[in-house]
Length: 382
Ligand SMILES: NC(=O)c1ccc[n+]([C@@H]2O[C@H](COP(=O)([O-])OP(=O)(O)OC[C@H]3O[C@@H](n4cnc5c(N)ncnc54)[C@H](O)[C@@H]3O)[C@@H](O)[C@H]2O)c1
Figure 1 (tube, rainbow, N blue to C red):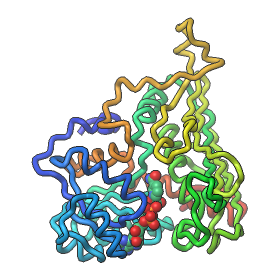
Figure 2: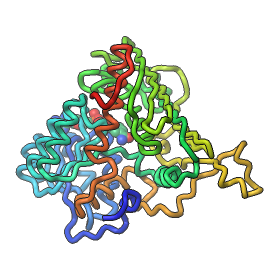
Figure 3: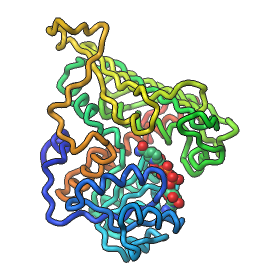
Figure 4: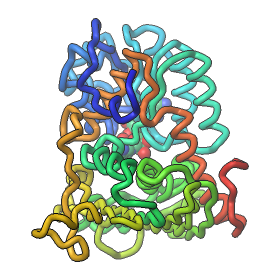
């Protein structure tokens, strides 16, 4: 089975039969998942699709070469009738728990888009249902499958940055401004701005990626304090368009998060990790196309590099060396599907399995509780 890091290198998987997957929710993100099923259909392939909008399911089936007899508008029916081993749930947040639990009870392995669900109770119910059913369950935290992030985690765990004392993440996306010049402009009334459907606002939509990445790099968070801004006209049902949080990690490091969907600022997704022997940064890309945001290399500087006279660690960062990482591609969405298929095959726990992802979701809901009560929230109590 190998260590967690070895399992990140999913190239060693040897499958007798391909894993047959039914995709649920043929919307935006499904198109990023599709190449993951086209990379090596002898290992993992799409065999069915379901969307409550029949035309969306049909369109996707055409693109994915799925037989007309395997197009569904009801996910339970798909699980009952289609010849599939697993589901890939790409729907809106308030449907995640119901769909994941039903699929697990039907004996299907479950790959579920982030965020796992819209409350801690729902997340726990999914984890328990998938464990009871004995199926593989993985939350699609695709940033854990960016090759340079995997390499950076290894460097941090090997102690190259020394003792980590600070982690910071910024998530600014102007998607809610309804400005046609923005690379992504989402209309008011979009489900992601509706607290009931989305389970929150910018934190559940976007920051969940970077909170999970900070855990991946630094470890567990034990308590949080946060403030959230609500009331922007594009947002309904208490969804926050901006948030700021302080996180205390179990190892004593302090993290900060700043997130906004409405500040008039350039797009910015970045994470900075500071240790007493070095620093690392996941810098924003120069190009503002959505896929570019997940293909940029992490950079770092550390005392270990000081022996190299051509490099000044006080003024520059260097790309993290990825030569010991053997993920299938540079595309994290493709890599996460290969990893899921490998785990379904050999029974290994995925890198973002249910118990692991519950800890990310506790940070999300801890931020909401703190923003509501004005108090520090102990995540162990959630
Ligand atoms: N990892 C990433 O980078 C990333 C990016 C975007 C979205 N996401 C996540 O992916 C998920 C979907 O987001 P999206 O942007 O693709 O949304 P979307 O609105 O574009 O697509 C959702 C699709 O699900 C369908 N649907 C809704 N309820 C359903 C049900 N009960 N059964 C079957 N189909 C149903 C809708 O008709 C729609 O076609 C969300 O969890 C979102 O947070 C992840």
